[in-house]
Each structure stands twice: as C-alpha cells, then as structure tokens.
Length: 277
Image (cartoon, rainbow, N blue to C red):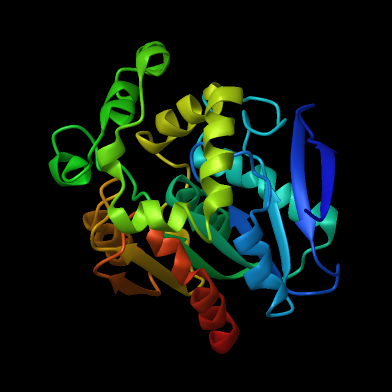
C-alpha cells in the first residue's frame, strides 16, 4: 500500500519505510506493534486518507526487511524513524503507537519536538520501573513470559521464543471480533511477522525492560493515551503510568475495550490531533 522505500542509515543498516499520501501533507507516523512487519495497515491508511493526512510507517530494526540491531534501545529505534522523516521531507506529524509501538512513538516525540506536534498511544507499554517495583507493571497480563524472560537477558529471551505459543486468553471477545472485521489485516500481519522475524520481537521485549534512552518527561508535545479497560496484554495500569509521567497528557479510557478492539478509536484519535493543532 503506497510506496516502499529502502533507506541506507548512517551506520550502514537498511531501514524499510512505507509511505502513503501527498508529500506536502501533514503526516501520521504509525509505530507498529510487536510483532508486525511495519507495512501500513488498511485501517490506518483509510483513517489518514479520510482526513487528508499522509501515512508513514517504518519497520523497526529486525522486522520487515530492516536490518536487525541487537541490543537496541527504544530511543535508538525511534532515531531510525527520525532519519526517515528527514529523508522523506516530513516537517510536521502526529506520532502514533499501538502496544509495543507506543514507547517508540513517545521516544520520537522526545527526540524530535521540532517535527512531532502530538502523540497518541493505544494500549501502550509504560516504562519498566525496575526489579522490586514491577508488581503492578506485570499485574493483569495474561501472558508475561516474554517480558519476564527478557529480564534475564538476551539468551533467556531467545530460549523463551523457541517454545512460546500465543495464549488465546490474552484477547477478549471484542478483540477477536475486531480481528475478524476491520482489523483483520493486523492479525494476518502479526502472524506472518512472528514467523518471519522472531528476532524483532525478542529485541522489542529486551528494550521494554531496560531504560528507553529518553524519559516521559522529555515528551513536550500534547499526548492522548487511549486505553482499553479490559486489556489483558497491556493492562490499564500502564496507561496510568504514562499519564502520570507525561507533561501534557490526557487519558481516554474505553472500559469495555481489549488490546485490539481499542484500535477502533484510531480515527477519533486523529481528529483529536487535528482539533488540537
């Protein structure tokens, strides 16, 4: 969908970027979840096009043809996106991140306040508070095995990946209905990406339980934190942590939504940015 670009990063790695829309338009920069290919999904493009917005997405290192970078931090992955925005001539954007993409959207806002004029997180992961202070961070997760294994380092997280299987209880009935409807493309992409690029998910989880390289306090742009009250993957407490740490944030709690069904709020989140601009 749209154009696919392969950019050469300054350190020699390749970054795959997807771009849809007129070059001069304000952009929505989509930060994909874990695992995902980085390709623009139809509901993201449709919501952007309906509002005259350009949609851009980059495959994080280790996904979708982008060169893997073991040990990458959240901020380092976001700096790749910042490079892509300069290469594509994006001068003003909304950074949007779903699930594992949310930390990267926030990091982009922290790194490039000259370009990012708003941030939206949907079911976003909050910064890890550290051992001994992480009971609430993990509380309510249907399957926390990947993140817990990441605390023991790359080898432990890789061993977990070799036997891990998706826990069906992670999703609510509304999540499954959403995956059978508007967001069917997300389920197909996640399944394909988990098989094709397992290293990307390993590197994401390792980055989530380490310092991001930026703090929430570094994000000066207005932020909308969208959270499903029934989320069993990234529970509601993460949204509270994000709102507490971000200087200019508001919480939109959707009590009945789960981890996937909350994505149906995306078009209205785009409208929030347009009205706030």
